[in-house]
Length: 163
Image 1 (cartoon, one colour):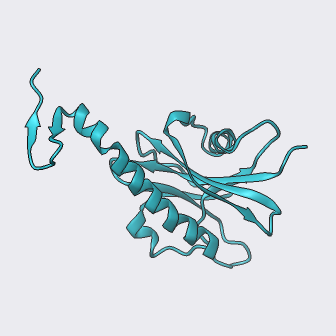
Image 2 (cartoon, rainbow, N blue to C red):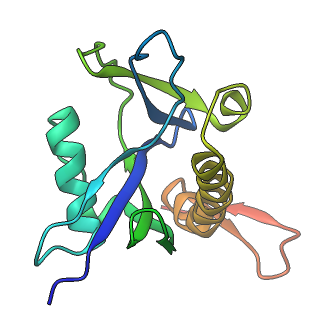
């Protein structure tokens, strides 16, 4: 039997450190809150594949599975399903036009503190920021190596690699 699950998340642009969020258009003059892109998982899908499908359906872009990272998962009482939070790194910041359903916009984590979110989404953003920063720290040695910089084991000296 297929266990129901729900996947949500955002796109992350490393160079500008911005995340892409979604805001549905207000209904009945009631302001809407910002949220992450989300949807239900299908049979024979894992959370990552569901997130890729959801992003493709909403934005018509394919995200790299190797650049998609889990944030956390939890059981969602209202949905009666496991909810997975993920993010995917993208190489460029693409501006998306507003649709009949809502608006997409890029924000830094600092800018998100001024946005209106549900309590759940606010928590997701806070945890996601920590995970993104931890991922960036774990990638630093790879980035430094790519740039030709090697730190000594003592961490006191920095030397350029000879080519």
